[in-house]
Length: 416
Image 1: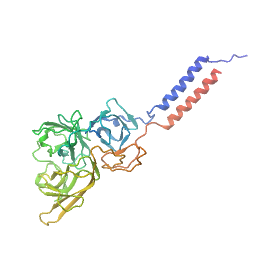
Image 2 (image 1 turned 90 degrees about the vertical axis):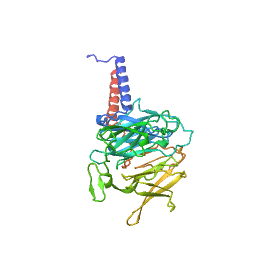
Image 3 (image 1 turned 30 degrees about the horizontal axis):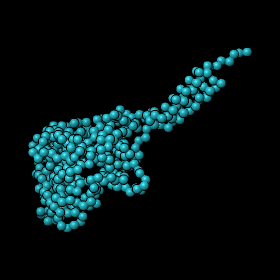
Image 4 (image 1 turned 180 degrees about the horizontal axis):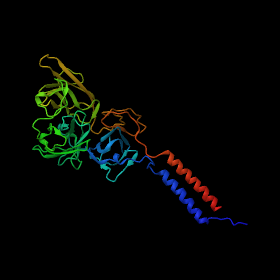
């Protein structure tokens, strides 16, 4: 009789344990087989700026246009529109709290020991008076960059940043910024101090400029690739209303005729200061009158400069709640009035908003008070809402589990 060949029992047990352990490990991993993130979608040098007691902005680039999301605490920040430049705003955070964040890019969840920040203390002093750093960014051909980020570093202040809008404008409120140790509001010296401005554009160019805080309202036009603010005349927007054609290159201020517009705050934006900064554009050297909440009595006024830019902040507090600001100008020839209106909401500085689903700017969404819901915020450019990318594939998981079962049966049979 032929002798039956058997594998020793301990070898069978080892095979059984290896099969089960391998199946458990591989089914638990979050890395996807066949859908790993492309190296081009890896985040490049993520930065955390504008940290306050209840908010922070996270920004970075990728070397190709990617759809990216960021998870901060219970929040998921969505950027559904593929882009090279990514800018996220995390709000309603807790004071003096350490937050880790992760980035989902190209189907892979990316974490790092450096992906962490701590929110500041709730300032005990009164909110400083309005103080805004703002300006415009242009490419060398006179057009505005598709996407760009401005980073502002001032000695004594926590890192600051701003996303550049499609019309080239950027703004940073120094009045609502914290000091470098994040214990109180930051106020630059009255005598001024040198500051570093870095512009990161979607074409990979980094433009570095030294400026002074005395020249923040506004900062002279920044030209991507030119590391100075000494251009003799500004490069302006790409459209001249008087002739109705696109413009390329440097244009004399006398040619600039911008439309009346309010560019900050954004429509339906929620802000946490009772004296917000408003700025926009209008025809050059024009008087702009402001009224609130459909009132007829002027609340204040300012004038646009020789580049068609204006900036204004109320001298008294605006009550909490929903409001609208109307800006009006009068044509000197026809005497007709032109009016634009912007809606916004003033919140308490310590407000915690239950949930946001935003496109362009945040708008509250009602949620039951007894059911905590993770916050979802979308970044500046509008896009269609969709859930963040989910790592992992179903098919490889099924194959691994099936293989583990087969190994288990074979091992059991050999042992017996």
